[in-house]
Structures are given as C-alpha cells and as structure tokens.
Length: 155
Ligand SMILES: [Zn+2]
Image 1 (cartoon, helix red, strand yellow):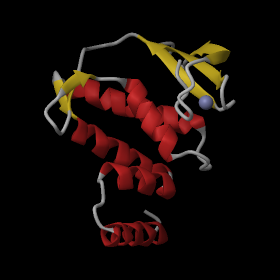
Image 2: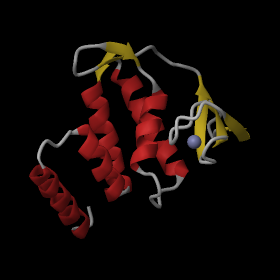
Image 3: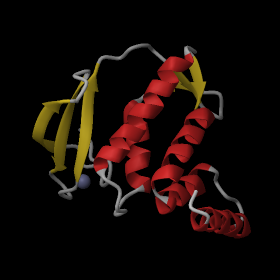
Image 4: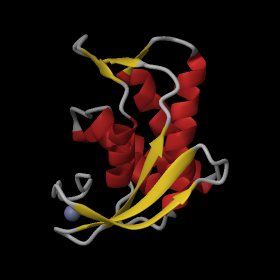
C-alpha cells in the first residue's frame, strides 16, 4: 500500500482488527520509507459509484483518494486518526446513500470541506486552499479571516 505522505510503495501492517460494527477490517500500517503511520480499511464495496471530475472525465469512486487528501490536509495537526477515519466513512456513507450512480468530484470536495471544518480549522484551510484553487492571495486572506471569525464565535 502506497504511503500517503511520501508515496513509497511498501508499508508494513502493524495491527489488524475488525471495526466496531464488524463491516470492515482496519489495518495500521507503517511506511518503510519515511516511517509514517497510516490506516487502511478493507470493506465490501456496496455499490459502484462513478466520480465525475470537473473536466468531465469519469473514474470509479475511490475511498483511498479521500483518505489521502484528508491525511495530507491534517498532517501534524492534533486530530486523532480515528476522527479522520470517521470523517471518511461518513462521506462514503453519504455518497452511498445518495443512491446515484454518479457523484461529482465537486460534491465530494464540499463534503470533505464540511467535515474538516468541524474537525480542525487549519486542516480545513489547507484543504480548501487547494480545493478551491484560490487564484489571488487576497481571496485566500478573506477566506482565512472568515474562518478565524467563525472559530472565534465557536462554530
Ligand atoms: Zn512514507
């Protein structure tokens, strides 16, 4: 399994156990390259969902891609891996219960942003800055200050 941090191809399984509801196997892995630890899940694919990207290309839904971007956005932040796993599982469930065969990458991006916003404001800003592709520094500053405002108000 490729390391989400340094893209090294090999990792070692350190721990393997069923999830609470017994619908998946959770594996703790350690990258043989950089030593980073990350988690993978093995689960039954409930339905085949196709992701429609902004350039209209289509690809199969891949949970690992969400895991990867969430892991990168929250790197070195004080967010428990478990919370990130829950976030990704929640998004996957949302997508599965939409009942659509296709979901846009934009919709998925919004779900990830919403989830991160509730977990950690720095991870949220990191993800959003990439996702929304802020063209001008000014936009980003406005965005960052609106997040600061939100966290002051305790939202
Ligand atoms: Zn690595």
